[in-house]
Image (cartoon, rainbow, N blue to C red; front, side, top):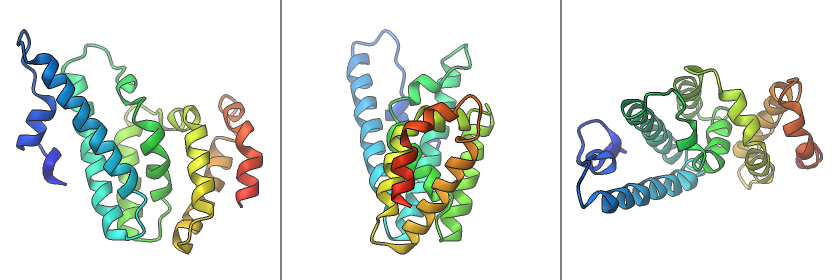
Length: 187
């Protein structure tokens, strides 16, 4: 979990910039592999049945996103960093959203705070959910049928929020519409 904290060695490997270096392509490849590995770990651990694992993954997830946002802002003159996250959102957004309803209070509250930190700064959380409705809906449907009753309850609450916020939104409702039968069947 501490691998992405400021000042740590892994973070420096992750984002080290050495312009003009012959090793730049190797560093880019290492960075890509590390990002992919972190996303895969988060994908599994944010959905773990053990709340301590979910909490640890939630901490890593927040640090991962914050670190990427800070680095993107350092190296970019524009404010459009969403493109760097597009490959991460389908795997991580569904789990981040669902964990805001998880029974364990620590996971739930931390996930709410993470959501605010990451998305409310630009006010684009609803847009990102709508844009990734397919992966979110598939994940929610899968979790509605989970063995763990706590996960099933969280999934049902998440589906209700999705219907309320995306389903009634003038601009985004059409992105959710194709998945409504699947969501209703899951409930």
